[in-house]
Image (cartoon, rainbow, N blue to C red):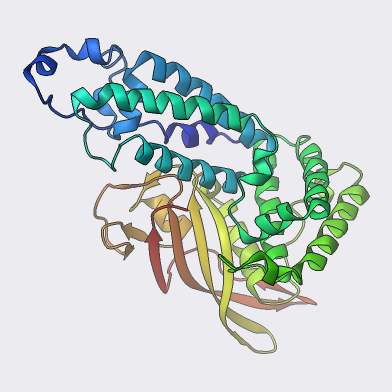
Length: 371
């Protein structure tokens, strides 16, 4: 449904120039014999080694198209696309590594066939796995997701809520549906903060059992909201502008409003928000939060998108914010960016309205490659 789905998928299919042959026989073989589509598809413009093979080899090219379709179908059936995108980016890295592709190092010509055969095998298996609906639960990579999938009652409640929400969002057009998906993901982050599951990576599930009741109540409450809306998506999404308290939930809503004014949600998804400090008076408040975002479509590390959507340019060599334009290096799918920023709020009746309208400036930041 989202316009950037194909861009997301294609980021896993790129390539660098093949290395020189190790022997005279290979050196004398025409490139069109080794990679028949290399010239036709202008694969010299592709920089990542695996992507170049998918571009230039007929069998890989065909299976790559099938993989794109399988990934797009999965993204269209899962409510939390961000997690699916992160999991797919991680699989691509693991696939490349297991097939002997190390970063951006060129593939030697006499290694092309074994690498190609490995990519074919791994990709065919991946397509089969993506078609299994059970995989959507097994592939979760968050503490809350693992806890929910480990409890049949919670897993069923989540599935039923997802189905109700998906049916409601299906009534919206593209841009409205995109915004509704974003808001639905914000519900999940709010749920995890409320149930004590935010920032609990690598915590054993047995220590999280107190959160199970909270999760059950959340699913029941949200399901009741969906039923009460009687199929009208406008009664579920796009209504909230004021927060009950100036806290991490309010910051989450504030960021959603900032990102909605531009093209930010085409390139970034908010992963988690944690409150680190707050200063509050009777009518005003400043909330400092740590915000983690994940790249869902590539963009230049120092660009208007980077500045307006993350609050700064990025120097990926130092993994830190950089205020002046530098490298044209791109932030690729699965890249995580963590910033710390202060948000201003004004008391408005019984609630709090966000007065911060831009992501700039940020107090600190770090760029992390990979989910």
